Image (cartoon, rainbow, N blue to C red):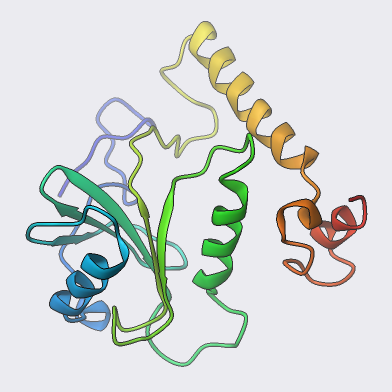
Length: 186
């Protein structure tokens, strides 16, 4: 599958679009559908699962049922270090940030039982947006680039104004790490 990206007018990107589920990432879709019926309000219909191409760390899969789209973030299969690919941490952070000015997708459910998708996973809304793979933002004019930078800076500033302890994340970072140092401010 060839997908246009923002690197060059006719370039293809290995980091966008969807692809078939790789054999090492296969799982029983019926078990995931049962989990979603139980934990995702309003979930109905047949479940279609499409992995995103080019994922770096945790496999991400788009799931569609009717007109609703969700994203499944799951850890990779196999033995992992206890802190590696911790989708549970991502779920907890996004859930905590939802009540702040930091833009995050709504998270619906955390599945810690590997029976659901083969590994721990969480379900969140799939939000459309532009992913600028090239940091030079080719093709954007000055007004669009300024708007992009303003929104990025607004989101980062909102994140830095939050004390992790104030949103229940005082223990989220490693002791002595930047996130833990910020926790002491609240």
